[in-house]
Length: 398
Image 1 (spheres, rainbow, N blue to C red):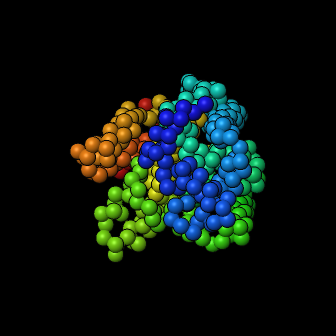
Image 2: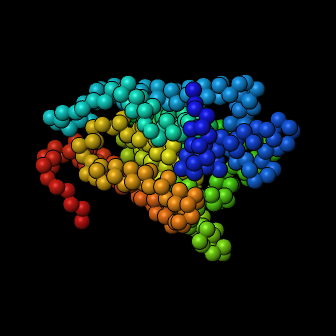
Image 3: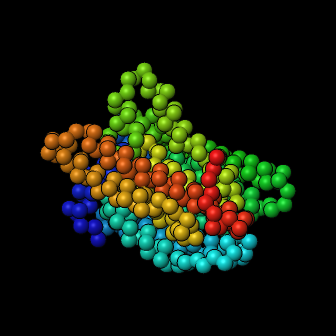
């Protein structure tokens, strides 16, 4: 199912495998755990106990079953995206006030959305590399789907699981809370605030319960080796993010300050983005997924594959995008140049770290450009809905 040479090569690529998603490190952790040694005592294993428990069971079976699990997770993500598309289409059809008068829309079918995700080269490469980020992605899309159909408690559980798997998805509780408020109460504003507070309290309770269980099983070392490790970006192995090169070059005395700045940049968008797009929490969640992909401490191409998989849900925004050509080219250049510059730097020795970091800057800038363009497209369409007379006018913000 997975050609061994291809899978082995891709699993070692820094663009696909990071210290917190590496399948090789996970197998090492499982091996230590099976020999009654805590995998969190050393500096090798930094993944969630949930994955450790799952792969301890899979380790007893032939490797084929591990491959099947990765394929099944990808299929489940694609199926959930298709179901999300179907629910969104139904809600859009029922909400006649959410359309631009005279608008002719191209409808992207749920099966097409699932197919685009599955056959995205970044998705295929991530699965071949056996990056454990796919388990976090499954929890994320399951949380968004549960939230939009009104299964609030289920959405909270999936969000807490995603947060334990990858930390940053914890910010998705903000749009999940808005979905819960909309589904549970469409009446007065005071009830809306109460529903949001209740959802946040439930999330804290579930996340705290998971932490208590894992601490009882593996000790508090697991927290230091996972959450604290991610927040401090303790392993500065090169990846497609912004952290590693900056913190290699910076003086040690300034590191704590800039760690706080960088992490707040990634996490602080949860409330303002969710509140600005409170009328469409699914869109707010998609924007946050894109922000996480660009600004987290250990990103990979797999993070971008999920963001791109969610974009076709909003096909009505396609005609409002102004910089789609620029964004697409930046992302393609970033993805294409990273392996080339890595080869020049590490394998040939004719380049240096600046080469590879330049490719990551292009890659991240492409994502940020796409995020700004997507947010602008959403705001412009909202303006056209509420003020149809402005459709042919250029909006200039002073």
